[in-house]
Length: 60
Image (cartoon, rainbow, N blue to C red; front, side, top):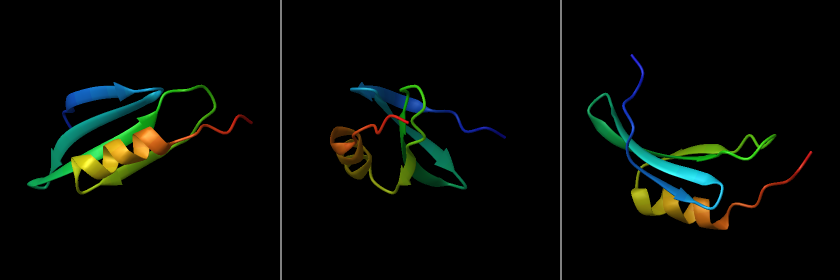
């Protein structure tokens, strides 16, 4: 079953979202720029937003 994302925000090219998996809240940061493979999961929303603010895409 796919997670249902909620509280989705965009910080630059990175989207930050929250979801619940196995009864635990998880937070995801994923870059939407072309050819950028940045995605990370975090235990706290603050950590995901910090990763989004400090992410720099490296073009290939």
